[in-house]
Image (cartoon, rainbow, N blue to C red; front, side, top):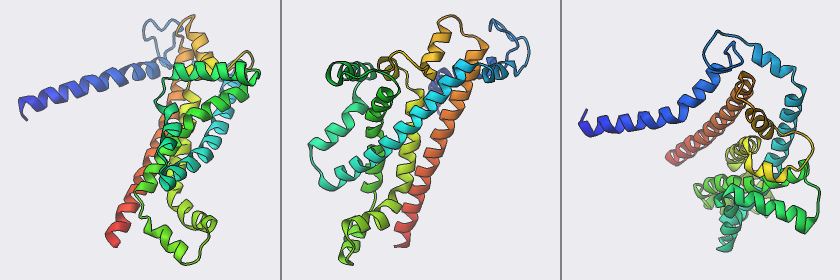
Length: 265
């Protein structure tokens, strides 16, 4: 191995260590039998049992799950429609409208939505405002995934369906939708992950009311990073990683099927 390759591996290892060692420490100390988290005392599952008896934390987790499910469902439907429209009509301004929330800084998007809800719509902030806000920035991610899937497909498939007498709705239901299902599911999982983890936009659009998991965790760590915080962070991390892995496997399977079909032709 050359000297340049050694330095490249060292830099890569340092970057990955910087990213993942803190996560490993959070997971490890969630099993620490000490509330101070100053040193390792021993292994325990007490903090996970304490979470099951923490009603406020359970309520926050339930609210976050409801928000994530609603936001992922609505953003998947709208994002799929946006991806189809971008691919089919090729209007120059449409990608800008769809993808701008993805590129926009979250703090700017959160403040904009806050002003929109309060000054334009004059609505009370709560669960509904959070769902609308999360749907707004998740649509772009779904549209990107669906559009990428459509661009990798052969348009002659749809032309053949229309030549055989299929209506636009029949072409979508029987041809387009089955082919883009992996991308749609991957977009839904990505939206769920982004929604349940989001803090900044949730902070601006939450209002006063039911607790939300990221805000609840932030409230707890303002006092101290206790093993209970580590435990809920570990569970949230596990859920997020599971969703990301499933989405990646679905996308990889779709790419593999696409390559196999091209080789068969």
